[in-house]
Structure formats: structure tokens, C-alpha cells
Length: 186
Image (cartoon, rainbow, N blue to C red):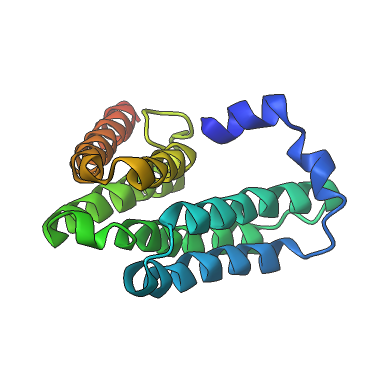
């Protein structure tokens, strides 16, 4: 939902024409930035928002570059979705020191279940895009804003991560039930 709203305000496809990097390389760079941030955030105390911002921007541009050049492919779409799961995990690991690791684990489960419900639902012929809340763009924005807040109010980060874990699991259950309900009529 976030990316669709952004596309209404900013023509990313037009911007994509001016980026001289292949969309698949942008996808790989997005994942590389996300994971290179894990030790830099945890060991050197660099701000997580920086890595979430750069990785998220690269991830948002890969599709725009592909569409603007007319090189959209199933391989590129797969690579993007596949590496997004790794980036999702990296973003959560940035917050390791703020909460019990079990919260990170539960948040990962919900994050992956949202994506799995969409993937499996669409493989079974159910349109799932836009069903529910906490889609990838919303999750990235949530974690980005949480990390920004952590700069000035670090004691709130833990509570926001508990809320994130609850939201992504509620969203996964909602999406899962929506897919299940739509399948029962087929």
C-alpha cells in the first residue's frame, strides 16, 4: 500500500530511466546494504535508520528501473521477493539489543507469514495484493520510524517492537484467513 501511494506522488518509473544500474544489481545491493548494516549497527552502534533507508530506497528503485526499461521479468520478481525476506530479517536484527530475542523471532514469524500467505494464496489463484495491512512497505516504514525514534527516545523502541510483533502476526492471521475463506468457495 505504501509503495502504491508513493507511486501516485512520485513517478518512480520515470526516475528509473535515469539510473544506470541493472534492476537485479539494485536488488542485490539492497540486500547487501541491509546485511552489512547488522554488524555495523550491533557492534559499532551506527544508526539502523540509515541502513533501512538506503536498503529500502534501493529495493523501491529496482522495480522502477525494470519497468522504465521494459525489462520486467519473472526472474527479477523472484529475486526481489526472495532477497526481501533476507532484508526483513536484517532490519529486525538491528533491534536485537532492545528486546528479548524471542520478540525478534516472533516478529520474523509474522513478517514471513504475511509474505507466505500472499505467495501461496496467489499460487492457488487468489488475488492477495492489498489484503490486510503491514505489507512490506508498511513494515519497512514502521521499522525506519522506530529506528529514528530510537535516536531521541531509545526507551520506547522496545515497546514499539512488541507492537510490531503483534501487528505483523495479526496481519498474517488476517491474510491467512482471507485466503482460506476465498479458497473454500472454489
